[in-house]
Structures are given as C-alpha cells and as structure tokens.
Image (cartoon, rainbow, N blue to C red; front, top):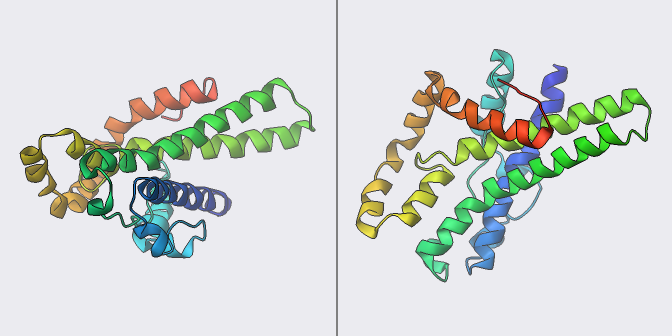
Length: 212
C-alpha cells in the first residue's frame, strides 16, 4: 500500500509531464489544438486514462513489474504544423525528452545529496530514495514510448524519417498497435528488450544503481 501511495503520484506526474511536453512543442510549431482543448496543464484530470494511468500501474505494483503507464494522448493536428513531417518528429520526441531531462536532474540531485549531506541522514536517505524513484520512472517511460510500435512515440519518429509511401504503409499498423503492445508486454518480450537500455541509462544517471 505504501508503494502505491508513493509510486502512483510519481507516475501520474511523469506521464502528465510527457503529454504536456508534446502539446507545448506542437504549439511552438504552429498547432494549438492541445491548448484549445485544455491539455497543456498539470491538472491530472484531463490526462487520466483509466487503463494506462490507473489499472496498469497498479497491476505492475502488484506483480512486482517495473511501474509504467501512459496518459491520454495529447491531440496534435499534423496539418496545422508548419512542416508536418519534420515537426511531428520533434513533437513525438518532446515527451520522452522531457522525461529524460527530469531523470538527469534527479541524478544530479542524488549526487548532491550523497556528496554534500546537509540534512540529517534519515532525511537524506528518504530524499535519495524518492529522487531515485522519480529517476527510474522517467527512464522507463521514454524507453517504452520510443519503441517503434504504433501509436507509441517511436513510431511517430520513425514515420517522420521514412519516405512518404513507406510511412503511409507503416501507419496502417496503428489499428493493431494496442494489441501488439499488450502481447509484447504480457509475453515478457518487450520488458526483456527494454531492460538493457533502462539499466544502462539508470546506471549512467544515478551513479551505479541497477534495477533489473
């Protein structure tokens, strides 16, 4: 129960940061759809997806799996972007990029807390543990989202790099994307693919902590 109380808010904040970043970058490139729909906000209510934000993280906690999930995708109208093909790549990368920046900040905070203990040790230990949790969640989220499986962010990046005809054919996979992701997760294939990347990033950012 304590793990749920601590980890779920961290995850919710992290996925909201992810989606707000998509909307903010889209707005910078000319599409204010997310702004008009009230999605560039850290109020969690507009962002919550029942399965991705609530049910999946709880199942992960119960089973001992790494905690991750997603929020409702921020709406982006590619036709309103100044250069739809190019700009969509940046919009897609914005969410994972924001998570990785937060993870890097957490790594720096952990180093400061360990190197310059300016508060009593129990408080320092608790602060390091909380910061480490935020770091891990914000490494898992971008690694998961950058896999090139529609509709994950990685598929948007890949589609923006492919020739138009190939990108169109590739986009047809999106109708099956949710099922592909669920199958890859439940069979353990996706976690096995993710774990070396996650471990490398966590080790690099945290100064030596391995989670798998």
